[in-house]
Length: 104
Image 1 (tube, helix red, strand yellow):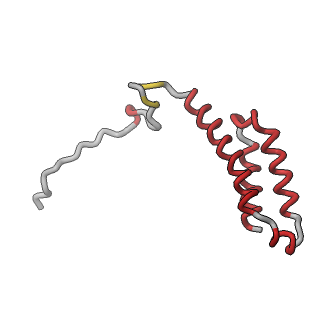
Image 2 (cartoon, rainbow, N blue to C red):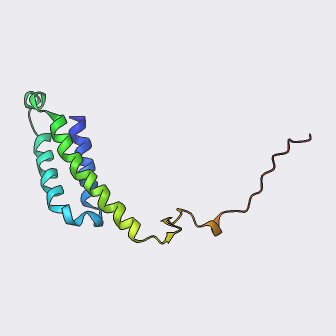
Image 3 (cartoon, rainbow, N blue to C red):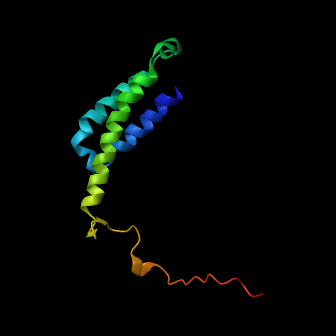
């Protein structure tokens, strides 16, 4: 039952993400199916192959992740063939390090 509730949480979160709009219908259907499974009797839950359902949910969550990452990349400038750093260099404090041992 814990796994089913985890899947409910992940799916509920995924539906709120704007970049996931193209697969919103599939996420919503999977959320409905997972919600239905959460109401099964204990005996029915014992017979349920949660791994198969989890795999189906995972496929959608991976697609959600791809969409969110693609959206994030579109908003970044490309610097020397790579992505923009998470923290702008100019905001980092200037620190100098010395390799000389302390003379105390």
